[in-house]
Image 1: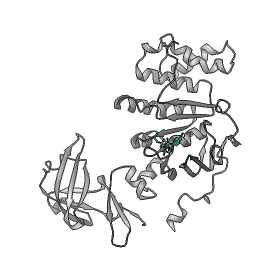
Image 2: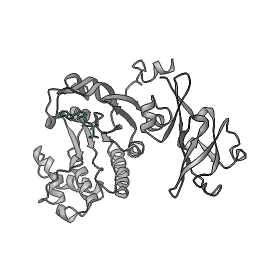
Image 3: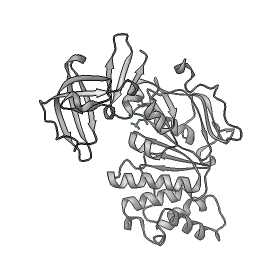
Image 4: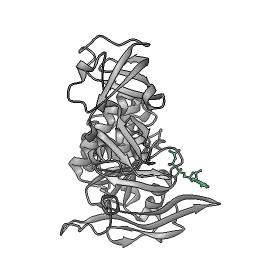
Length: 349
Ligand SMILES: Nc1ncnc2c1ncn2[C@@H]1O[C@H](COP(=O)(O)OP(=O)(O)OP(=O)(O)O)[C@@H](O)[C@H]1O
């Protein structure tokens, strides 16, 4: 019953909620490849949606359909209530930032940001102030006269964001714009996207295969696999109540245990406690014995791989977030693992 109701269309929408993007029964078939299958979802105005999925799952195709670079094989897309399949990209009021930034290298930062305003024939008298405002917003106030090669990768990224937003589009589309950045800068820019998006309230759709990014930046996450939407939910719900085994496996680290009734049971690596003896596992309602196959020290946590004979020699991954509670257990150590029934996820076959 619970499964039948999840994500169903009978959920009443609160009165007065504006829908910025509505994707209805969209299919995209390339020569023999069904890249997007029966995709349907609504996105409320002002929300930050991330489309998350492995390589080839159809994320970029779905984004390109919304942008208007391609027309769906069937189905329709609505932006602010209007069907857009016949509307070319430049008439859709969409700002975009892609991995390849496509900035103009010979222009200054300010000239790059001014470009969309000139294309749209904005009043020339208003342009400098508007450009300055958006450079300030991305924390590049005072950098307007720099040429692109005089800016760092992260600063160029900010120019691209300012350029995508300066004409105040209805929708911002991001296609892995951070993928090429190193980890620290990427994490900083994720928070930056979030801050700017909240400040402006611009409806945003972001494509990534980085689950951490999806959890950090989004109001909602769509998880795709094989061209199909697997789940659309808020980050915490996606994490805590994945709709199927694929989602559970893709987000977070999950151990799957096959039950005799064909059901798949899953337990998150951080929900398993580990101790040398049973005494360290007070409160656990399932306790199994195992042998440490590997122990990886990661600073704030230790990742254990534990072989459990009573579970068909399953190799369970366990995160120990309090490594100081007992000394690190070495490979070959006999250990006990414990968890509570409430932490086990159940998936029907
Ligand atoms: N122009 C095209 N012609 C034919 N097949 C295509 C085309 N573009 C994408 N595909 C196929 O459609 C499927 C979905 O591709 P898509 O690029 O949307 O996936 P993705 O989830 O964005 O992957 P990645 O993370 O690798 O970018 C893949 O099987 C891909 O090979």
